Length: 461
Image 1: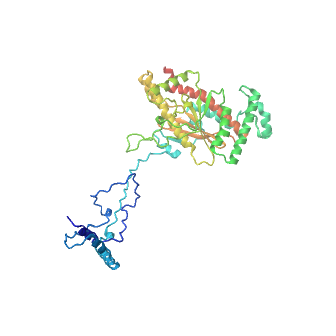
Image 2 (image 1 turned 45 degrees about the vertical axis):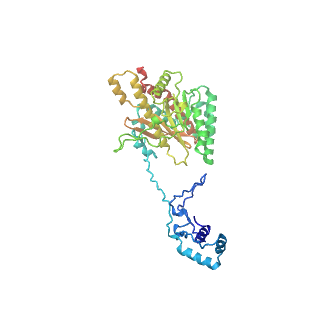
Image 3 (image 1 turned 120 degrees about the vertical axis):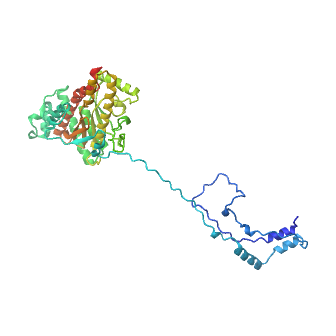
């Protein structure tokens, strides 16, 4: 057993390290503070976690009988400053140079992100040609009736008469209108006999409302009102004036109505793709729609039954290309998109996507209906050659109202237009607009509803 004096002599022989080098963190990243202090194992081989090099330790000397007691050892530990300085010098010479150890750094993990496939998008009206059933715009010829289908010609003629100011003003307010515009600004052909209920009082009420709409439209331009304000203060009052109660036509604000996923028009197949893709423009919205009011009719019963049957088969419980509840059972006949003059948005893009989605949804109904009724093989072949009814698409830019006729050509959809409907700029043009919208309402109640009956094989029930 070692003597105490020998042990103390060995302790005194240990080199004293005055200044320990600062050990820098091997990682520049901040370390999270643990909730518990980690226990350090004795077998940790990390050199940076040790403050002494094993070379510092000396082998304790052997036991000597000549050693004195502990008191002598304590006296020998009191050394002068020179001895301490010399020993410090020895330590500096024999100590491990920590600066030679490389500073370890944690390599940053660079994640290679796999680029997601770019989803094709329809950004302009020119891109509508990329659809599986392209939507093509065509300027109307000098005589549009030469190219328009039969189901839309009567409407075009009525609009043409209205924009030429033929019989657009009730004769009951002739004196008031002549007083407002001046005797030389009116012509006998401007006036017509009133065929609506109310006579003079109804005509005077219409004149008053039109004047208010015109003044509000002019103020909206001067104040730089946003599109939403135009819709609320100008366009909605105009539509309500024409399609009020008893018109058998429903005007529905559709600003929040989106295209249903099962109706999104698909892009045409590319050379390296076997299946058509859906464009990223599936959320294009419009401002208003004009739908046929089918309440208490046999067509309404058929539409209601088909919508529920389609829902049971997993194809959506909606008749149109949108799941918007107010339009669930009402066939959309006319679509309206509005904008202000300063807007860079292309309203024809929204209208084109919307009508392409409507064609997509109507094709689903035709296919579903053809399987539900018994038809001959010859009749079934005729169904595939039948075109869908042409419909008006209205574009409103501040004062001006214009229409495009979306005509089905089986392989593509042609938009003929724009054709003026009138405007809210002046009293005469406002009366022309009223007459044009009234003609559209009459067309919806007659030609459109008859065409939808034919498309749904109503006579085959």
